[in-house]
Length: 356
Image (cartoon, rainbow, N blue to C red):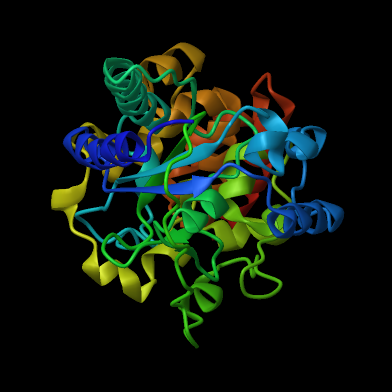
């Protein structure tokens, strides 16, 4: 049996160390599986709302709770890191020359930034526990394992899942990257956060593709973030015009949330500062990227994971929506691209530009 004063001391130390490492919030939750959370996941998958993200369905049983993945886990340390934007994410809407990249992808790859800080926190915990003669095992996760970060963060009191399904925090809005550390120590759980969306439906109204069949439920197959990042084939025609000039992700439902008025860029981790060339990128420059140039331009960025072909496909949709005749020559050149998905998008964009 671990001494409770030692546990509480370590827990307080974790709160202080997390802040020192650049986390905006930390909370603790039991690692026991929650049948309610598991049921919601299975219902969502059953509706087919995951689209082609087969990896979510393949590991659904492991994803349903911490102890389903790691039976020895006793507590979840939930962590949130702010990437609050300094500029209006909707400012470039309708711009005929520029493209819109989701705020989260304008800086360094959050996987690397968050995991580095999490590993430092985990090392601190192991070292401090050892000083008290306490053994602890930990596992660190950042969006690359079957971990339900958002419901776990809500259970840990960091915030609540809003009607747009993303986590909301009263101090930092919804501009948060989430991570989790599973550990074998029985930390004192924080109180789960209550829902504070009320009657607001701003996020539902803002969605360009009507991807919310109802509040708190997202049909990924209609979501521009899914279509531009996860979806590998041609973009369904029914969503192309609604994409506008969004080429990587979509911030609309996040940007309109009233809780963001409390989010301050001062709380943003310094490593997540946007790169100037990604905040207002020129479509003409992006359309010119071959594979080597794409890899070089997006080195250290989450965008690199998508690959050149999918990215240029998105840029062609934006070009077709731009009505900008100056892009037609570039678009025509891509009609013979070796990738058939890129070539098809170029055909569509060229026809749109000729008609415009």
